[in-house]
Image (cartoon, rainbow, N blue to C red):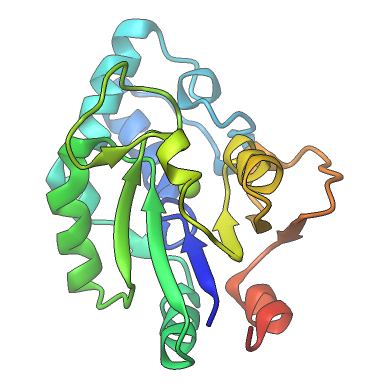
Amino acid sequence: MKRIYVDLDDVISRTTDTYSAVIEQEFGRQVRFEDLTCFDLKVSFQLTDREYRHFFDRIHQPDLLMGFDLVPGAKEMMARWIEAGHRVDIVTGRPPSAREASLAWLDRQRIPFSEFIMVDKYNRSGEDHPGVISKTRLMARLYDLAVEDSLDTALFLAEEMGVQVLLYDRPWNARPVIYPNITRVTSWQDIAALTCCP
Ligand SMILES: [Mg+2]
């Protein structure tokens, strides 16, 4: 039995694909997905503080969270892992306000998983929020394998937690990473080929 960590945004749900449309709608600006070379969306979309606050609120509203498409192959691979007896946790850095809509979306899309865990991955909340654990508390959990698209989080998992990480290739993590525990993957087909069946 393996303990597997799967990130939600841009690994299971096509989140950032949706953001370009939001930027165009809210600010009348066009940004291509390939140009989103920074994980910090404020930088990638060149938003002022005020614009970013508006954008952040907008992208965490339930109607938007419910509208995401699936990353192809994610659901099928997670189902295979669960069938094979592995533990598959969804570990997200979404804010606590997004909990209900996130769970509703996972349910609507029939994504199989063992546990849904909210972690303060980006050190957003100064203090503890109920239902959200700190990175320090995440370290107490043991994982054998993780699928992530955030380079900082991938490094944290690999270096601090000794997890084997599959870094899901995205424009914002495109810089070369040479780390023994991190393998870049470009699709869930890649992941299936690499891990079948851990
Ligand atoms: Mg992500």
